Length: 340
Ligand code: TXA
Ligand code: MG
Image (cartoon, protein in one colour):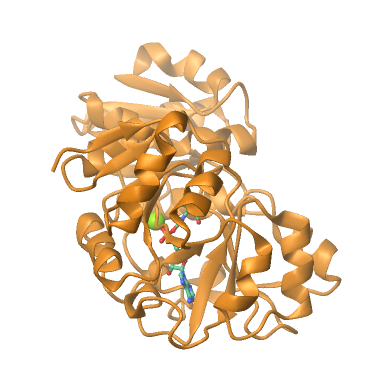
């Protein structure tokens, strides 16, 4: 199958392909999503096949406006209304109690709940409107790999497997949306950290929001099924180095080079400027340690090293706190939590 590249002017063509049950990758403010008609079972099954995604990992449904949600789920609790008003369109996915018979069965992978979000990207909101149907949208990468933050990343993973890609440049946030479970409205739980933080959610809801235990301890089975799989991993192993102590970085570089590794460094510009001449390749996460820049650049960085001769990546890790949760969650999974 030829994978066509679309831009703003071609949205009607892309919408028509969605109606015909084809797959179209779309831009969002977080990462690119792999779009299909959420009411069409055959189309949704193609999404799992194209990504190589395990069938027990449910998909997020993308809508073009908050008012449509009440028809799509069993109930919209007041807490959901508040969060939609505060954060939509934007990087927040909410898990609602599902209404039976609405979506294609494989969307929810057999669960009695459904994930919904309204992305903040004009082309994609228009695509959903013109297609006239909500779209499933898992990240548009091969399952297990870093999510795509540009149309090129999508093309690299899925060319030949999907009908088209809507190119809207590099995404802003760079990490997937925050997923919050509000099926028990009195006890909202963050299943996946993202750009919308626990503090920001609590400020709107006016009561404490918990992190799902597995995010903290890894001991229980995760409630977001997707979190149990290998995730966000580039071709080369990733080892984390915490902080910016230059002697610690030099020690790590020497340790791996002695074992014959060609080392790549993924860290802030100040650090890589000092270490550049000592390693094979470097990629900057941003001017200096800044969590927004690091999140924006993380996946592009992980994918960059695949095009080099680097055999392992040393990546900058931070303290785990409310602001750093999303970045640390992803980079710890990329590395299998391996620290130097
Ligand atoms: O930012 C994003 O959310 C991107 C863009 C494209 O919108 N999408 C995305 O989708 O990250 P995906 O499929 O890669 O991740 C969806 C996550 C998975 O961890 C999945 O297990 C979880 O949401 N999820 C989906 N439905 C769920 C449900 N009913 N209950 C619990 N977790 C659910
Ligand atoms: Mg994903």
